[in-house]
Image (cartoon, rainbow, N blue to C red):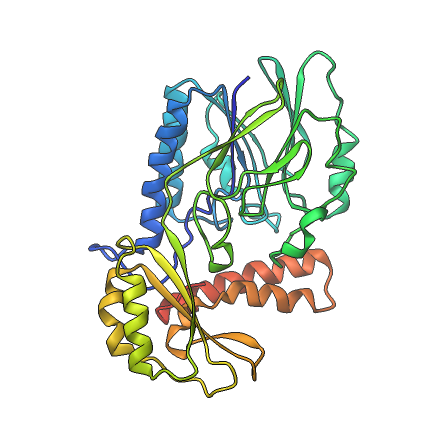
Length: 374
């Protein structure tokens, strides 16, 4: 069987303050366009099954445009007679009983096999059994779900789940309902384990992989490999598949101790002018022990208009940390900072998830009104 493993589309995420002609967020619209191109590329690979390993929506209450884009993609797979196996992630998982999971809305086809109701589900397609464990409400629920797994000796066995492998716990995203997956789940009894949640393409066990997200969704992902994975569980082969994405480039570090703001602007422009239009770029200004100088924003206006975003970080030994220029507040991950704050509060998992959901919605509304991005 030929499987293509994908995850973490996060449809609906809007970033930066650059808009299309009709006023839509340019980052968000470009992500939809790339997803459509990527879908056609996946179909051209002629797979038997496409896996979507959670967080295909950025919110449990996605925008209409997000739902429409995903339904269009699912219709393409159906027309190509390709089965889709999907689970909910912590972003598109309801945290309250009265909220409906968006996967229930988009998964209306016999060729779409969806698990999003906080319980284990088993799907048989051709010679493979897919063991689906969606993002759960509580960490203990994963162990409960694993007790229901019955390994088939006559089929390939593929586990599909969403969470943070303990082997990469240092890459925690500090989000609501971010649960760790330990050796009790990442076991060698499966021919392949398809993971979602971490946005970089990475192998975390001999048989377990994150496909990563198609797009760079934050500057912390600048070094991540993006795309999908082509998997043959019978032969135990895993190969990278390139998919279109918005370019994100690290322009390196400028040692800025003796340079004026105007000189720094000239260097930044020279480094960035050859980048693709509407790409994202990050550059670090290292001032050592010298006072930080502000780069004149008017000098960067043309290059900022050309790029989707230019992220300038100030670094000094005195501060012993990288700092974002005051005029570039849109680069701050407000939702991530809020998640970190909640992790430090004495709350139950259920309380933390509810506060995170309401707080995230409020933050996104506020930062949109202020012209920055969550």
